[in-house]
Image (cartoon, rainbow, N blue to C red; front, side, top):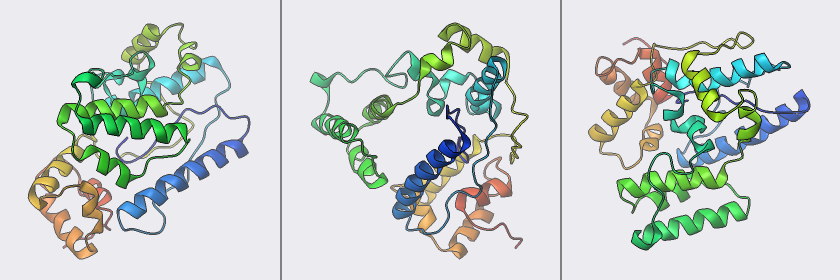
Length: 253
């Protein structure tokens, strides 16, 4: 999701789960802060967990996680959202057609080779590396490279999830029929929709003539505060959502 992460994880105990999130979030924060010239704590809250011991509760949880982007008006069906990875269960290239390497640019071929080298080395890709690989590609190739990266790095055990529903199609039917729920974790949502974040990004990229949206985070707090008040009214985002996007305290002017 644009401002938080959901995961359905199989762990033998809470200590293994805590270790997984500690390691994965710290690596993410290091790469993010390095790119954005930032420091300190990136994730505002520690992760919350809610063990699921029955098949019914697991199904409900999977439906909830899959449908979160639907509830936040980012798509109409769970499988249409790239970042919950549901569509990748049956198609390694759901966002674009499979790269046809004989008709692909040399830049795309080099990018795919580099991705596979990193996967083979069991190493994460940095923001700087991704920016370098994507920069010379056209729109179609960028979609294809995203699919390549997700497919190559994907560690989701789809069969373990699907078995709770009987089949992939039945899992989608269940997600289409119900939003799911998560009573054990208290989530506080800001605004009615997360679609506003894409609009904020488009406005800032256009008005500030940015090459990368992360460059906004390198601005001073004063500059970001000025942007905050300029953005209010240009989208349907709440002031709280804009402040969270810019990572600046919400104050009144």
